[in-house]
Image 1 (cartoon, one colour):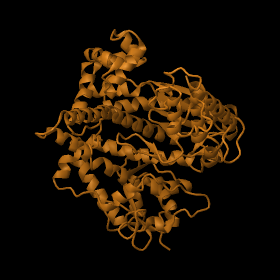
Image 2: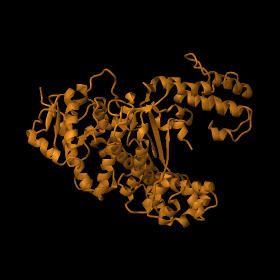
Image 3: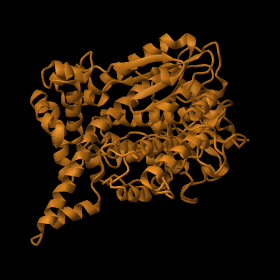
Length: 607
């Protein structure tokens, strides 16, 4: 049987182990993981690839990784965290750091900071990157009772199907390519930080799934019964929805109306003399008619029943935990997505079901007005930073005399970041530009870049996608000699639309970078804390005794912690927010205050 790291690595014997331990916790040790042609898994030093550190069978990998993690705290180099890490977590093995080649390639191959290095002759991404990316939204969570590592998961990339991963040789070759691009980027330090943060996010995403968000089925069912009535029989609608549907049909004089069909509802509304273009709640409320209130109420309950009703509860809440499938880096700006469960859209009504285990607490924190603060720091706009320091940004803008009311300040800032040019935003944004010229110039430049069809880049180096070919065809058509006024209007409109995207991209993407650095720092601090007295067994073998992250939503996190650790955890959450600000923006005087609460139920944290 091939030796494992617990016995003796294949290369260098005990001396090699001592060398690895000598640079512990510095991040200098890097170990690549990948399958060999014979089906065994190789653990290889990328700087000495000829002689593996260890070669193990799939069933022995967790033991080998745990041994190296204990002795060297290496940076693991692997193809896709979502392929490797969930199975290690299921075996009780946590790793401190990794290089996720799939996520890193998405950044390096599109960043304007690496354009010169790519043009200088760097090879393109290998085919296996595209294959893995195509399956990125369909992770395979570890199911109870299955083998820890399925042999087919590690079949060589060139020999397998789109779902299989690359061989160790392919992993090593891609690692060399990516290190070359990062070293040759316009800002190597920033790029290395971005890649490390993105890879840390991949680890966090897997850990959030493994630990799960504590969830009370009893509380959730009580919420559903209070809002919808008793659980209906299969194929039937909840009682209160049925009563509302009867009322809507009566008021619209449409006895056969299917309220779940937008086409039918629009037709019935118009037939009743209500001139609507959609069934959106805000448009419906612009009209007075006895059918409007019950229709709006029906739509709200229908959303609850479909998105977080009994069927959702049966599918997603298992053993007192909600385990959504997070997709780190799942959007263009670097914000996360989910491929199931709707974790990024939990309505307030069901948050009362997020309840800490007995003897544990939830530390809930969100960064107050994160994007305006990031904008001020990106632009080095000290006037805007002064308005934000130690207080609500929008209130600070009012106190600076820019506008008269907080709501006006919020409208103006959001209008500036999202490119609103009409209504209140169009009227207020010029005031903001006079008060904070650096900040407004930054987003205006980003918009102008987008309108020209060029990419923009975040604080650390993630670049926006270029417009699609259809966009360029519209622009080209408007420049032809026989272009009509309609062609020119269409081109201007599409250019402005893309400019609004790039205007916000630099701010939203840089805010996502701040959030990743915040969570990565916090993750390490939580792992170093002493175990609590009460165990949360449903959180799995890695997280049953220690504080751990359980939820993330753009600028908000939840930590599940033993009650006796809450003060230490709360202090760490705040300290890591400040640390992320210094890491990304140096000594620029911007602060990142948090709205922080220690609660037993998520609903109690809502201000």
